[in-house]
Image (cartoon, rainbow, N blue to C red; front, side, top):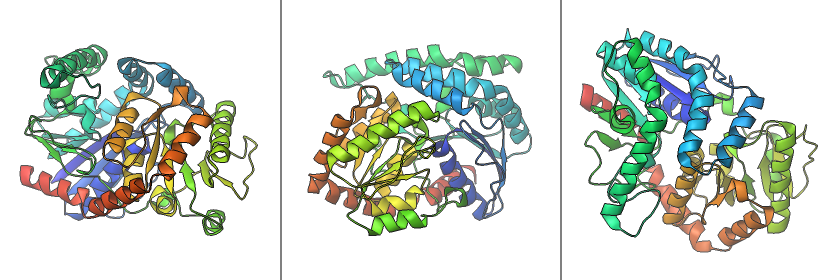
Length: 422
């Protein structure tokens, strides 16, 4: 088949699509992947190992300065709907028309299209062109169920149904105007529910989450299939472990890796404050630490025997050498940490990240998630000491990792696509 794919977001939203594209191409399909990266141009010129046609559109969507202002606004917002509205308005809407044009081009020459579940431009274009559309969900929090809800109430299924009804009401209020603006351009009837008509595709919806981290629910739509983490070998742009980092690892006990990922401030002022917090945390926790900050040198930091600063490091390569990982709770980092068999300390900036932290805590491989807007070095150090002082957590993390290593999310996704569309 000729398969068109499209994604939007940060590295954690792009990497799974690169993995799936490579898997589909290796299986004999002709794949084109269009990437819109919010915060960088790292994917310009990326070359596929199997011949996938890769292009970028409207990347980066925002400048580092704009990204910092957006991050600050998002994690100051207490309401998850306000967080989502801010991110979509400032990080998605500026690229929407360019992504829609690219989506229409994909649909004009494809037997099947596959999109990030936020990618309503591709869903609209596919429906208009009569091309089958598959959505890829990177978090199971987006699938409603009467058996649970991110907000827990002591009223069982009736309470969960009420919460999901209210949640969908809020989501539609915040999001429906986006696809419906595009649908009006094509003289199409409006969408009435963002969850069941955009996020969840009726032919097939791939839930790219390890079964170790989510529990499929019996009332999920029949089209939703948990394929597993869409993983791939380390990419060239992710780099290798540099010599200084390798020497630090060999010089003492396993360190704690500390990173806020794409939510680390990019401007020197705010990044300096974040790096100071993480450095002070390492001192208070009494641990060796690798602290990731893209501009740590400009911020005036110097590495020592206790703390090593890095601009970036390949998570797949470095996490197995660490004792635990402090991270922001992004879907990709969450699953990479778990796959490495290491406990997590999650510092959530937005509600979706808090969900991942709660899931890791539920299965016993993380402490309770912390919130960035109320974070102090003392709180974070206390949580690190708690995790490091709970050997059962490290044992459980290794058990979960071994089970994850038996999975092959890409192969399962390719199988499901072939089974559905032949």
